[in-house]
Image 1: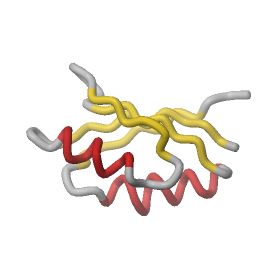
Image 2: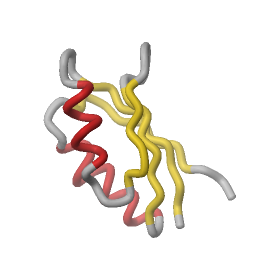
Image 3: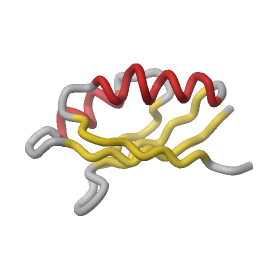
Length: 76
């Protein structure tokens, strides 16, 4: 399994909507709204790095209101 933290910048007024949409995605274990930057920190536990790549590029970055993502893979 691959664990990662994804820092997400959301458009103004969209943080709650983005966090809710994140929680509906397979592999997303938490999506916590924060003050400051980033707006949301998502915790992901997913099969492998290829699946993580698909999750970030094909799903998370396509959510309405997501402006930017920064992915940090946890080391073993």
